[in-house]
Length: 197
Image (cartoon, rainbow, N blue to C red; front, side, top):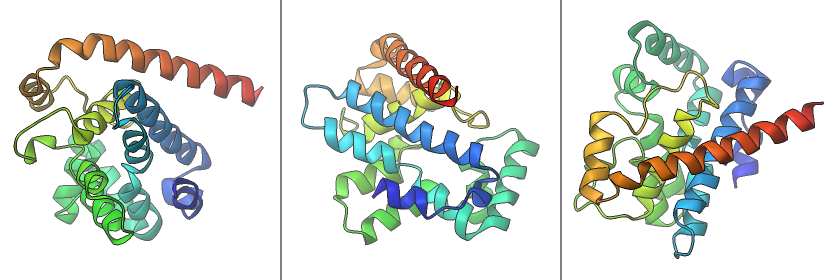
């Protein structure tokens, strides 16, 4: 599913082959982080799949609505805001909701659809528990912090995410999780360097 999703997007849709590669690397890094956060639980495999697909809505925007996608990126730069905030401003929806809708049409489990749809705003789901949505939110935020996509803004350090992590009772685990993310990002970077040489 992931291979087909990425193959269907031309490099032109994301601006360059390097950008598409960075976009895919972000998803793989988030998936690796998610698997580590959920290790030893029944969530591990589902978290990996959800993170591989969590930005599929952005692929749809980039490949099918290139002009709007370019407008969104420009607005994010001009306003120094996140891409998902710029998407909401321009489209009235975000890549997260678009991706969740698409995955729902494809018949993926509701838990994956919910996690993808809400990965930027997990607080929209009542009764926060450390579930698939929490893992995807945390893994995506940690992957963003490690800058495989340089123009991604936002992290788990914003007030909303910190309040959400506190409500889950896991805020104290963030430093250790950040170290896991850093190790995985370094490993991916080293691997990419070796492959390019």
